[in-house]
Length: 69
Image 1 (cartoon, rainbow, N blue to C red):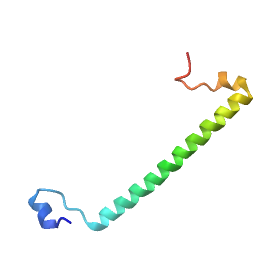
Image 2: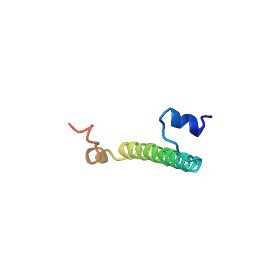
Image 3: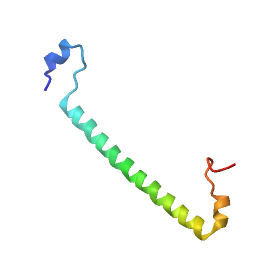
Image 4: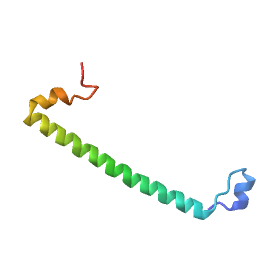
């Protein structure tokens, strides 16, 4: 592990270990949130596909912009 003295000699910023831990925790929280949102999107896509099969009229009303002519 790099010491503070080595970091200063290398002209790098020195950050407190507590700040590093706080930021690492924030990254983990954001990664979990991203995973949840990704799952939600997949579930909603599957639900929309099922709805389109059951009710073809939904297809014309729920087209995504990239599907539109």
